[in-house]
Image 1 (tube, rainbow, N blue to C red):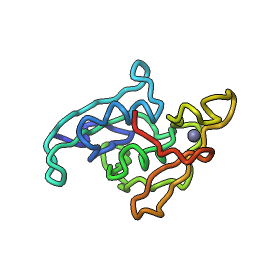
Image 2: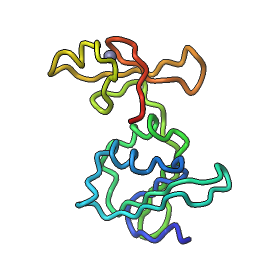
Image 3: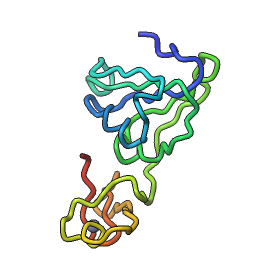
Length: 142
Ligand SMILES: [Zn+2]
């Protein structure tokens, strides 16, 4: 499979198999307005199977969220058909308004108009978990 089939854009590789749709959701990409290719459940030497997303547009969206939804992914920036840079997502120390607290008694659930803030908690070891700033509930992928 040719990885560089896009001219200018971004390739997100090594996404855990089956999680590409969550990545698209969390990146806020609109599938009806974004030129992209989705490869799901393809073979990965590193993980057995993986998903790949190729997006033909500049990466103006917030890639930090990948540190939550797919921290082991690799981000490849493509210019003129060539990969010009490659990196793994960082684990942002905080996430604001990208995920919602799942605790029904949390103040952010009960009251509207409050920012949904999460912070990275590494007290249990790396890579850590994201917890609600208000009630400490662990963030869940949904
Ligand atoms: Zn909460």
